[in-house]
Image (cartoon, rainbow, N blue to C red; front, top):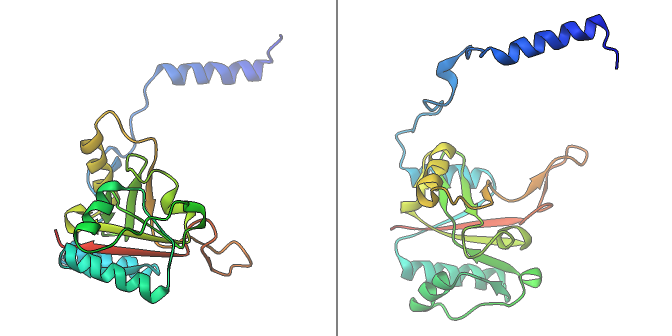
Length: 211
């Protein structure tokens, strides 16, 4: 194949560029320091503010007994009858504090699903979920209501901190999916009108337990 002089000139320049390393123009901007600095607020307060601003529903619990009582109240108030939970440890802990067996067998037809999480990101009000959890990939996405049970020890300030925690927890065996869920599913693609619950749950609850 004949190559035109102009194309040959371009190829020579590309080959030359590939053999020479180009210095970074701004070497100090590669994530060595965070753009955002922690505020003076407690992480639980900052998370609650950001999460509720995004239409999330936040409940703070002093202990496991209050968690079970508050969870019962929310379920009864909303008249949910089919509650799905796949995590055995979570079900055991709730049962130990007076929350009766509530497992509904089909995630596709449940009213709400309960999961734990990996971490909570205070700056953005995000829930960090992963495929490494027993609840798997689908539970927090396919149900109309997602109820997340978390603990104050799982709070981190920024997304970078959450990713660092994941590296420390899983090492070289990172889960195949790590998700940052920030409030209920919403889109404004349709005539620029905000619609909630299109690609995921229409309501998201976080029950944060002081631990």
